[in-house]
Image 1 (cartoon, rainbow over the protein chains, first blue to last red):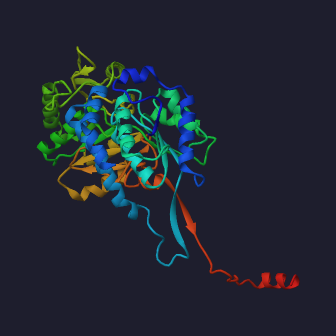
Image 2: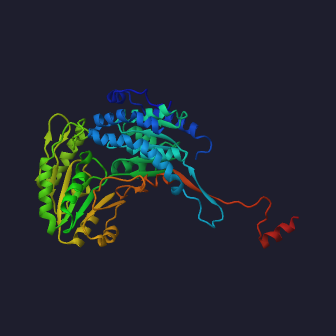
Image 3: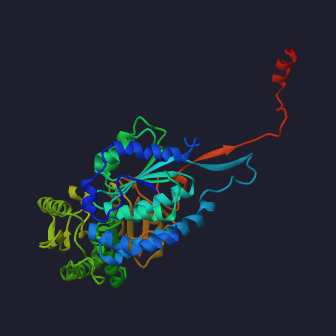
Length: 41
Length: 417
């Protein structure tokens, strides 16, 4: 399952009210860097 | 992946229309482009990432950047992230995606395609958020490349936020103020049809939308009359109706901005030929057509609505010069029977997409796509996308144990033998 800042929902407005704060960016980028592996820049 | 994308097409299309108001027929086309992009990109990887030239003393390879951030717009909430994500993934990158805050559900359903396809954890990541989230993502030190599609103002802020990270590849696909130049010998029916497609599809909310018509005197009156009658007849409708040509604008704020820009244009002397009206029941506006001199300041503002500014040129040369006065440089069209003028148009009008006898709208994934000037850099979409997600590596090698000839070095080494 890819990382998302909340579980899939069917209501766009609900997603917006549950917006990630900027710390979600750190979580997502960290997950990406782990997947990219040691060869990434 | 393509099979899963096709399974999600109906849900994606409906989400796009419900969130940003694009007529459902257009949204279906957009949703269908997800699977198509996968096949197109796989086919083009070999020739867009070519081997070194014959005779080169080594090989060239294209290394993935690593973590690529893709920040998307609301007007093509699926296509304009997908067009970057697929090349990024197929060249070995991982992605962090932030859809527009206007279209979070479209972005979420798109993410579900990747979940269903079973990509390894961390390869595709999605975050929702407002501008501050996008800014934090673009400037994050763990991000190696940023691909942004949206307004010039936001693109500029991203460049600013990444100023101290010169290693970061920042690709911008920004707005447009796209002219259609119509010369006396243009085919009137074809020209009217193409200009209407350019101005009205997606309710004018395309970066490639036609927003200026520059017509020479011999055809100007007939063309203006035809466009005016078409604009008066074109009424916005329910975007979920498959026969609707024009939907609402994406938000009430977009409608307010559009109407404010038109008021500004009138204050600068633009003459309404057909005036826009706000309609009740949503962010609906009727299309507007203004006649202008060509030097008004508002012609440098992207409109993002169903509007045309019409100006009359004295001759072909004057028409080309007017089209060239454009701080944006995304798309431009020329309508004429004379193919011999094409090179002159190409030379004079700076744009990343040039169209002959066709709308400024539309793009091919098999050709480069992007603009210059205030329209962006690097042509980050289309056929060149795989290169934008990689950095080139030159690889040279000598046989194991071969000593490179160098007389002076031989002498030096002799002294330590």
